[in-house]
Amino acid sequence: MENRSHRMVHLGYGKYWRSDHIVGLLPIEEGRGPGRRTEVYVSSRPEPVIASRAEDTILDDMSMGPSREARADELRSAVEELQGVLQGLSPVLRRMLRNEGDLDVNAWLRRLDSLSAEDPPDDGQEELFPAD
Image 1 (cartoon, rainbow, N blue to C red):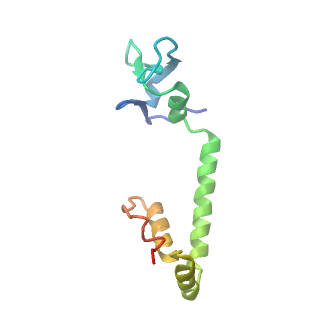
Image 2: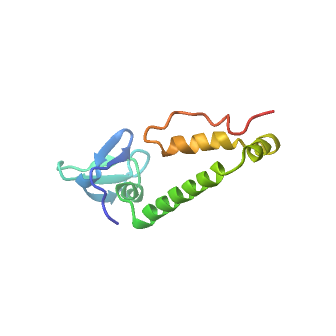
């Protein structure tokens, strides 16, 4: 796995550290419990930072393997394809789906558009499946 530079890693209980400054993770074996899971060694401190998260979780947050990137790209592609299909539906079919199946195609398209925008608005989901 490759370390992602300048990525903030959550160590638990409000502690964050930059991934490129973390040089070692050591699971705590004696005295391990809530708030004491992992010793995190960082380049700028002589003593480790005590993390409340497990070492494998911290390591996963520090890196993003190629399989996760490929999966994210595939998901983006599927969403774009779905948007195209939904946009191609006729107004009559959209009304039928809304009235007969409680599926509001226009609301879903707005939501998908907002998710692909840089600063998506905070929209609720209640309009997607209207109650009769």
